[in-house]
Image (cartoon, rainbow, N blue to C red; front, side):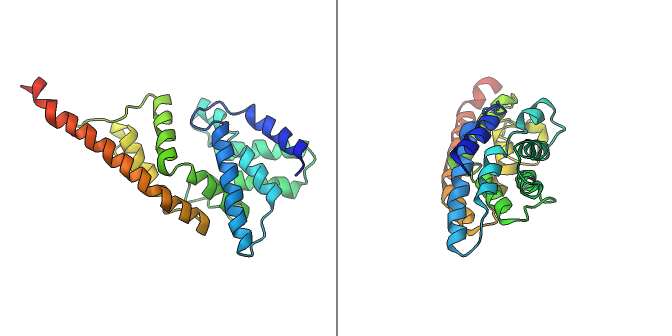
Length: 227
């Protein structure tokens, strides 16, 4: 990939990134992680199409703005088709453009549409790495603020709700247990698994510390207004 081509693709990406939790810096982190994982894969003897991987990493979230406007849409599917059309307009071959589309379409965390090629698996892992550790928590907090969900919710007994499947109490804690704790088990590459495991402890320490502070607040003051 030439410098001019990268710059052209980057400009197209930047024109579609309007989500604070999925901003250009997220894209650059995913790109960096993709190259890191690809290097380890090549070191193990696996052939990786770098042009496809770089392009898929740059464009993987361009469908986010359309999903944000219409939650019934899947940003991965929409973004994949947008990328396909864009690359064909820029004289990529149909096979290569379709490869990028498929990488983007399967990068979202869904069990019924797993990534098939090594490039798609690397992109999947690189994107999921940005949902691990301290970064994953920070991005989740930003997202919950965007959709006006609270940091935590209390049940009728005054207890913090942490159940991930309890959609009646949407909050950071509900999202953490519904989504973030599951991310660590879904990596396709050894490098992805290694990096995720290193970050997992940071996430657990933060989560447990925050939960402890909130619980302590209510245990110490709940009686003041309950009589």
